[in-house]
Each structure stands twice: as C-alpha cells, then as structure tokens.
Image (cartoon, rainbow, N blue to C red; front, top):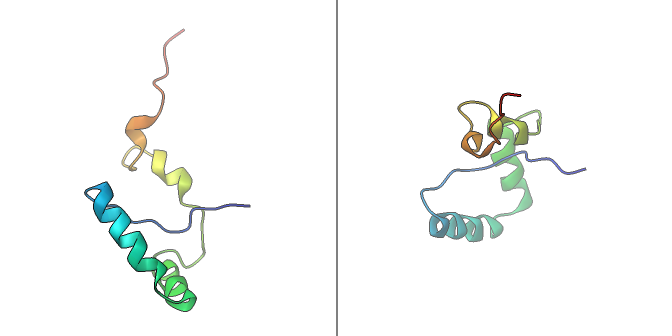
Length: 66
C-alpha cells in the first residue's frame, strides 16, 4: 500500500530537487517527526490535491454536460 503522507510546495523544480537532496541526508527519526508535525495520523493526503483549493485542482478533467 502506498500513501502520500507528507509534501512541500516549491516555487520551482530546482528548489524542490535541492530540498529533496537535503532531506535525504536526515535520519529516519527526523523525517518521521516532520511527517507527524503536520499529519499525526499519517492520513493519505493525495485526495486533498484535487479539492477546490488543492494544488492539483486545475488538472482535473472537466466534466462535459450530456
């Protein structure tokens, strides 16, 4: 089972890659604390991407009237 339990938004791909490389250097306990700070129940955050104010809302297919 795969769940999205944490994410960060960045202004550009370069900033995101730089942050990802920095995060890889931290120990597992630090990463777990990072997740649990914002998502203590480890909920799957992926469905939130598509709510009206979510980061991927604009990528949803437009429903056409029959």
